[in-house]
Length: 87
Image 1 (tube, rainbow, N blue to C red):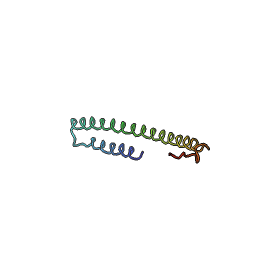
Image 2: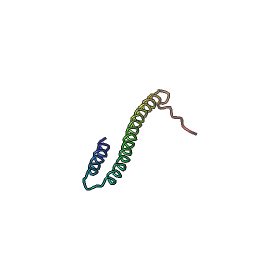
Image 3: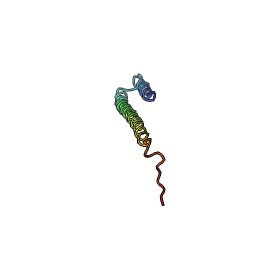
Image 4: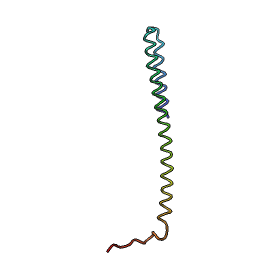
């Protein structure tokens, strides 16, 4: 999450340059459009990161459930020590 905040902070910092008095109105308008685009990109990145975090949590949960099922399945007495020898 810190990286996302960092992206937003960096974007806000750069946006501050657009209020510089030496920029023309046309230059300010161009920068505004560029920063609007970057804002949309940052929002998309944050959304993707959130979805990735959710998928990681689901995968971790499913992995834990699979381990539980495997433990129960292979701990049954008929599977313990009943390895058949191939002839």
